[in-house]
Image (cartoon, rainbow, N blue to C red; front, side, top):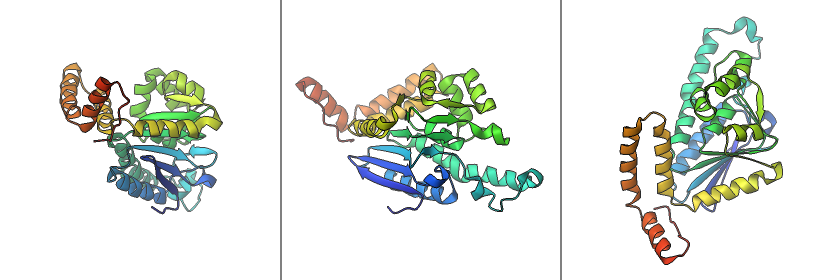
Length: 271
């Protein structure tokens, strides 16, 4: 796959997607969204890809939306912002961000985010929509929306309270203060904080480890965790019953049991 705003490389059953507009802190524009759609369409159809790693080029993960792409005339928006701007921003969510978040959440394979610098606005929330987030110690997460009079989007108002609770979610969303990766890990916003020079080694190793696991089972685990947010206990027990039936019919389950009984490491094929 050849792109201009992202890079996609596949090795060891891991597809690594690198947001590649480093001069713009990898902020989103229409081209990047279109290329991400194409990349995920290819990944979804490639059974050899068993995990995805998402990161950013240069000194930042993603600074959110490139406002120059939305407001290319460069006018002073204080006097001219109005219904046209409101409609365009709403269309951006429906056309680009909401489908991307949904795609990350329903992909039947694990997605790891490696946050290598600033993750602001939609950039922060796209990272948090991934299954496991690992961040460099110098990384920062910023819900920057309130600083320009907007509401957190890209599932921020859904994800934040579920990860860090309502009090911290309100503080992050209403104050727009940056929090560092170490604090993010302590709060449970992300999985782990690591030294900057270890980020890509650790993240790539984590993605390869996930790619070697029973892929169907990981996809079912992801579905169960996603649906638990809206299920009561009875509904979740019923869902676990359904998904366990599916998992127990896979080749990987048979391999796992055989390896356990033979006291050898399992070799999962993702089937």
